Amino acid sequence: MLHTCLIMTCMLFFAACTHHSVTQPNPSLYEDFLDIYRGPLNHLNAVKRGVCPMYPSCSEYSRQAVEKHGFAIGWAMAMDRLLRCGRDELRRAPKILVHGQWKFYDPLSANDNWWYSAGGDITP
Image (cartoon, rainbow, N blue to C red; front, side, top):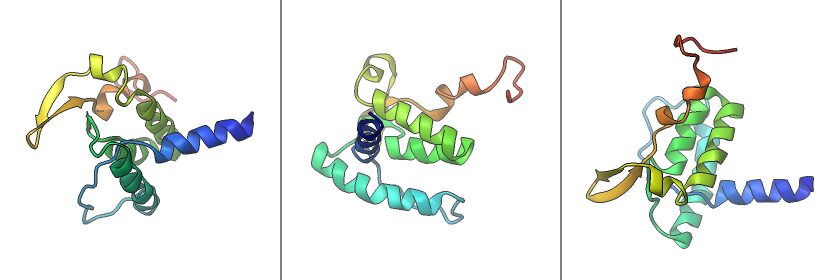
């Protein structure tokens, strides 16, 4: 069972939507990890469908989640996004025009509200 879960997680991780963005001049602590992650995703996405329907793309969303919340929570949020990408989210997310293409807007800030309490403080 554990072996099956590991394989499924790897498949979700490497079959995600991607967007190749310009690297930032000040790389974060996780930039090396994300560069390793982006390579296979860019290749597999081109084979799979070519363009991510979400904005930001799943790989950019994952990068933001890991950078903002750390590896463990960021990884969990990335997996959640991959499960939602191109499915239910297309009926729920608003459409926006990005570089001449319509995308479904699903920013990290719309999905990490569970992390903050009503008073705005970070919960332990």
